[in-house]
Length: 529
Image (cartoon, rainbow, N blue to C red; front, side, top):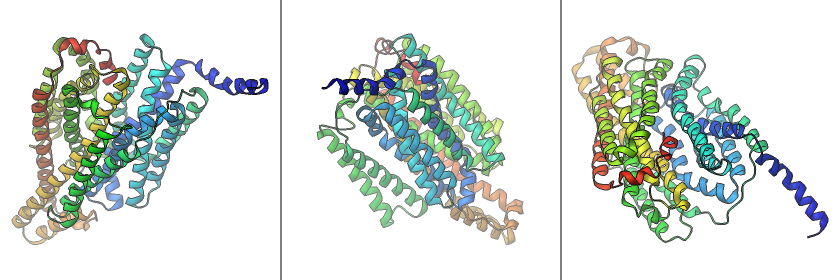
């Protein structure tokens, strides 16, 4: 190498060196901001879903795709996103992930058709799949092990927990006083600012050698999409329809091929060795099951409190705040209890409480009140969530090698997102089937104009097209319609309760981690909160 080349190389490295001395508070602000944007999106959109459905003329079942388009892309590509950060550079992929997330938000906010909205949600999911694991890995590389890194994890955890509550409130405010589009537009200026900050202040990380498991990622994502599409098609049509059978069969075959390929691939994105530990495998199973229960519960509870109970978007956001508050406070308590009690009792108790809360939700009817019917079930369910989620993260990383720590924790997020997609599709099937049966029963009980108006309202719910104004002012027909909606929601909540029971059994059978084992990774509990 010549002297001129050495000087040029030294000058080229100067900005990178400068970035390494950047104020750590500023770096943490950028990383936490990215996490906030991703977490906030999981709740801010939920509050706006009924308004979105009315705008696009879509039924409750159809609107599940507004959630699943994001979760399938996010969960299906999360491991590939983390791998991309290692191979292509964390700083670069941090910016790319934020850019895609912002672009998807802009596209969804500008959407004039449901298909464009879904495309925007997919792009958001891809961006989140890149940004989320990259943000977490930046903490481990930019902050020194010990107090500095623990402080960074604490802030990251606080943002993760608080972001959900912020999303509920912000979603309510934006939808109530502006428009549903602003729950998506709000990400754009935040994303652009974080991208600029990442470019100027995060140093370029060392790139690792390796290859991408493209085939494995395609098999997993297409398999999940086919499976979820099959469930939703069954809800809209029937289980015996050719499209439903073909989609479900194709999903199972593709996911089976994914498992077989991953067990033999030298570049597997999900190496099978990670499941060798029974407790760790059990933590993924439990997260998958509980993710299925929670996503569906949030979705149908939002439609219930707005459509049946008549809550505004803002009031809906406020109604959920006790849930977030209990999880934030409870997670801190659980992180202290875990080394003393051990994970198994906490997981059994937490899963049982979640199942009990879901069963309580299943008792709702058209006359349900928030204080006596919704809030108690919310308190019980949130307490169960607080017991479970921190504990599962600790179990997942207990006795794992240093090289697999990121993979072990990331798979929990994958399980939550994918389980949520499956659960939402299953609950959609239960909701639609129960609603149709109850609808026929309620129509048979009415006569004259009220019978006609109820039929209009039921047709509106299935097609997403508004009924005549007279149908909405017929109190007899409207109450009967709310009874149908409540019955459908209660059956969906009952399915969630069954998921909770299955999670209890899984915790009893699969988890065998000792207290002494978890004590070694107790510090990670704070980051899991």
